[in-house]
Length: 363
Image (cartoon, rainbow, N blue to C red; front, side, top):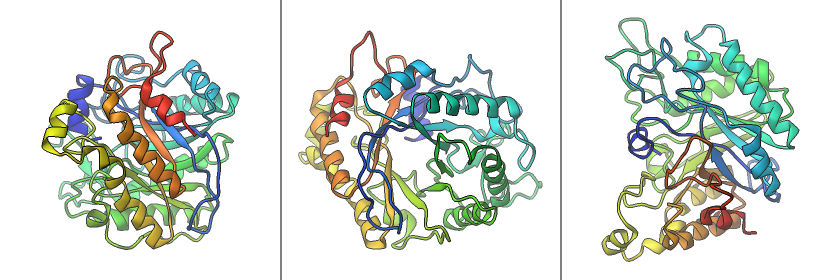
């Protein structure tokens, strides 16, 4: 989901992601076995990035601008049979200077979350929720500097900086029993002169050189949109991994502009497009077909519908069926204790289980 549209949905603050496992089968392609499961996003640790002036010098206050979900939320989903979480975090909070030491306080919060996941028999995908950027807090670059774009002032963010972050995180986290995967970058987009394919390969190379065998998730350029994946990322898979353990991550929403904001009523969506009920499969198929042709593993890292509009339910069900046919995991967007009344939230309210979550849990 795009940064700008998230601001509309969350009134200037909230966003996030996480995973859940319901069942396992053998993966197609990629030379590795994998679970096929359905998940849900747990938002919180990446919140607050839309506050004016956000950046490494002003990363926000824990408990005020952002949070980590509590063990109670993990327990709730684990009791439904869910055993994996995708945890979004911000680079600026983990590393206040690109190439510098990690922030041990923030890393401690990540470790507490991993420990809690282990306690409930869950596993975690750590997701760097930075959109191909790093924010220093400069008014000149309110959304941050793009990774891989040279800067004449010497303050550019390089692919080496991104690799350095992941190598430091790997050294501290890769042996934790709750770690399922590292998601290298959420929704890179509008990368200018930067080459996301080259950047992501560089990070993979750096991690593998250090002996890290962790599963690595590789998002697609162009907001990771499933419907135009090939246009944004080319016809061929691009990561060469000596351990053959990467997964390509796409996102898929069903509203008219693919944003996940669902600003139009369903009736208006139907008036504009009488094939709206086919979007569940038509929008995800290009990505699934690309994975099949390339013999690689894929994952739908985000999808979601308004919880109070039942006419979207068959569209979601169609995506889930199509992904299951290709043995592709799906992660729902989103849950989390700070979502409040966000229409896409499946966080339980007063004991009520949201209808999209019930569809997600169907076998």
